[in-house]
Image (cartoon, rainbow, N blue to C red; front, side):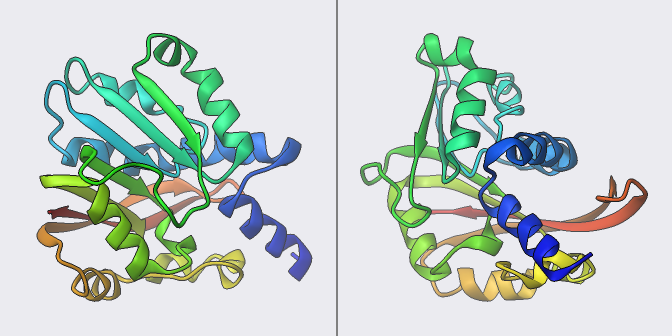
Length: 217
């Protein structure tokens, strides 16, 4: 593939838009669903929790959040206008029942008050954080005391085999992510790495190593 094509893929992964964006959103939901469900399950969600997700994509997994406990409120933040619209459409029943709330944001400032959420999670967004340490402090700020934040990402060893990650991506190993977290007041509850089989962009099955880090305020 040419440089321009690889850059276009990286750009769509960061911020899906246009006709290709819908396709990208569907593909991301499909390939990330195991990582996403794994993150949600690791949050140990309880009844009446307020949950925040950073970078929800097309929101195809939001129903799974509501299966975890009763009387939940889900809030999703997204940089992509297209994914915001898709997630609202996919989850229109939850939106109309005032259980799910979707908001566009700039990827830097979380537009909620201090100590707003019991649980926060994000999957495959860390590569695009503009100021990672500052953003972690934002997450810490809006999380309630004793609340959990679950950070899930594909390992650098896998990601660097993908040609488009040379553009717009900051890759992370477990150690690099832990060093970043160590600069904040978060307590690390546990770290887990595993490998799964996923379809590559060209359709063959490949082994993807990913890591989940559960933190507590």
